[in-house]
Image (cartoon, rainbow, N blue to C red):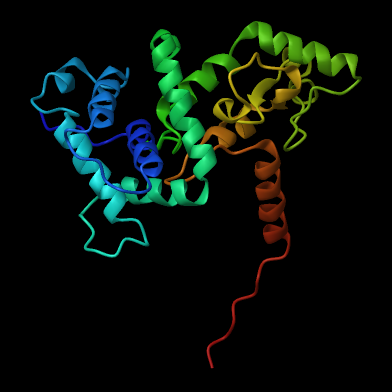
Length: 257
């Protein structure tokens, strides 16, 4: 068995360590490298066979990954080490959204330390049909999906919408299950966290943190693309509007001269 490629969760943690070290690599003997090595080996994402491999996420391998991050930074003056596209995408994310990505790393560390992320079983759609994972990491998507599927939370959100006199329609596309399916669709809607849990912080989910979505829009909010992040209902609504406008007003092809 070959050593598994670094996952987004692992890259978030390694990249955050490099950022906090001033975008400098860390040597094998550094205590923080040993701590990260132990943390990576504790993540509930690899098989027992992977963990048994010699050198799997060892301090040496962690140190080499910090070198990849440091030497592939755009402002590094020397020769860059060879690294894969996921590492380069994580570098871009850490540069453009440093605070958010550091929050993601902290959320993973805290979730592992508390045991929460070990207790949540794998969720359908934490990895989409293309095999893509949100750049913040699979474990944070797993936690978000598990909370969104909490039937008590969904029931409370529906009750809130009804108290406010608002229809149970998708907040992105206005789809209404009752209108489409009659009695079968009455009272049905899915909920989605408007803000990533690692950004909103370690607190109880408030009902106003949730948006009501149809199944299609909910899936599109969670669908990942290399280097992309959490998709909010507002950003998805903007994508729908842009796509609709493009369909109504297509750009005519220019004729060759």
